[in-house]
Each structure stands twice: as C-alpha cells, then as structure tokens.
Image 1 (cartoon, rainbow, N blue to C red):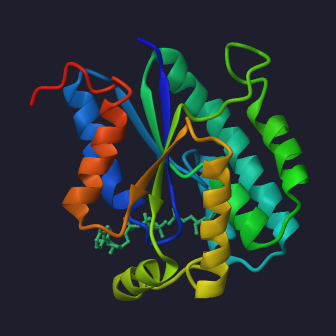
Image 2 (image 1 turned 135 degrees about the horizontal axis):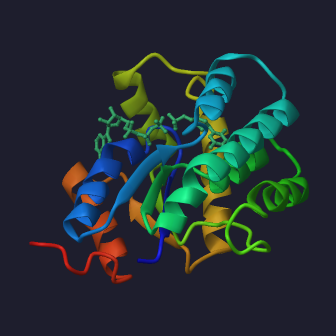
Amino acid sequence: MQGLFITFEGIDGAGKSSHIDTLAQALRAAGRQVTLTREPGGTPLAEKLRAMLLHDAMDALTETLLVFAARRDHLRVVIEPALARGDVVLCDRFTDATFAYQGVGRGFDLQVLSYMERLAQTGIALEPDLMRNPDLTLWFDVPPEVAAERLAAARTPDRFEAEGVEFFTRVARGYADRAAGATQRFARLDGAQPRAQVAAQMLAAVAARGWLQGATP
Ligand SMILES: Nc1ncnc2c1ncn2[C@@H]1O[C@H](COP(=O)(O)OP(=O)(O)OP(=O)(O)O)[C@@H](O)[C@H]1O
Ligand SMILES: Cc1cn([C@H]2C[C@H](O)[C@@H](COP(=O)(O)O)O2)c(=O)[nH]c1=O
C-alpha cells in the first residue's frame, strides 16, 4: 500500500492531540498500519531538542534552527521509513507550524524559512529530489480566545503556551496564509465545535479522499 502523510495543525489548545487517536482507530479499522508521531520530537534526539524549545529561552533564529534540526532527524529516522513501509503517518504538527509560529508569530523571514524547508525535507525519501510534504493537513481552526480558555483550564503553560492572545492571533493568521497557499492539501475544521462534531469533520475530510474505504461501520 502507498504510504500517506497526514499532519495535524492549529494554535496551541486547538484540539489536535485530542483527535489524533480517533483518526488512528478509524484508519486501523480500514486496514491501515498507522505510525503516530509529533513535532518537535518523534525521535530520541528530536525529543531532547523539543525539551529545549519548550523550556529554554532563545531567539527566533535559534528556535528555527532547532525545529528544522529536529525535523530532519524525525524524517530520517521515523517518517520516511514508515512511508516506505506503506504506513499512514499521523504527525501532530509539521512545517506549517514553523511558518505560523517562527514566521508570522515571531516575524522570521518567510523566504529564509522556504529555503530551510527545502534543505531539511529533501534527499531522504526514496525519490532523491522529492521535498517531503504532507498529503493532507487537518487544520483545527479555533479563535485564540477559545484556545486560551481551554489551555488555562488544562495545564501549566510551556514557553509557547505562555504567549498572549496577540501572538496567537498572528500564528492563526500564519496558518490561514498557509492554507490559502495550499487549498488542496489543507482541510479546515471548525475546532470551536464540540468534540464529536470536530471528530466528524475530521473523519469526513479523510473519507472524502477515499482513505477510509474498507472501514467497518
Ligand atoms: N472540541 C473541544 N471542545 C472543548 N474542549 C476541547 C475540545 N477539543 C479539545 N478540548 C480540550 O482543550 C484542551 C486542549 O486540547 P488539546 O491538547 O487536544 O489541544 P492541542 O491542539 O493538541 O494543544 P497543544 O498544541 O497545546 O498541545 C484540552 O483540555 C482538551 O480536553
Ligand atoms: C513543530 C513546531 C512546533 N512549534 C511549537 C508549537 C507548540 O507550542 C510547541 C509544541 O507543543 P505541542 O503541545 O506538541 O503542540 O512547539 C513551533 O514553534 N514550531 C514548529 O515548527
């Protein structure tokens, strides 16, 4: 079977992690092998970089270099081998997050990000010139105020979650810009709906691509 790469994106508190297992179960019921992973992270090295990114003070360039270093290792060790086996890879965040957070959120140069994206994501797949990109990006679109309320009730904030509503308004705009530039790849979900409705939107977006065929009802 052909591997599939599906990413989950949205601002902190949008509900991505709450829904990833639901999609994994639906895909397994359709007969697919699923690899569940996340960014930054997913390998021992990338998880160390994640801990630094989430908790240590640094400037935007250092942040950007670390997310791409983590991503390259993650692609090399986990994502590309899983896709080569024919798995569906479900990844909680990928490069759209870099454009949204480091790019529009922190104000890092978007052209430099595009260059780094090409550098980090090319030359690992079986097809040597391929720049790895998701086949589908599930974008959990939630107003920053709603996400902030959810997070306040949920946990002690990390370095990103501690940012204010203005930062997340920019990050949300970053996601909207990315979605506008890749309308075929992005599926926008109204993440402010109750969980069951968000899950239904997510499954419909995947089913619409024919990827849940064979699932037992
Ligand atoms: N549709 C929903 N309605 C109400 N609350 C929700 C909904 N989806 C998730 N939540 C709650 O919101 C909080 C954040 O959800 P979750 O951790 O899934 O978000 P996330 O997008 O993965 O956030 P982060 O990127 O910060 O990890 C959790 O407490 C979760 O239970
Ligand atoms: C991939 C990626 C992530 N981030 C930020 C966004 C989040 O605040 C954290 C990860 O935490 P989560 O609870 O797992 O969502 O990292 C980023 O700034 N840039 C990136 O490329």
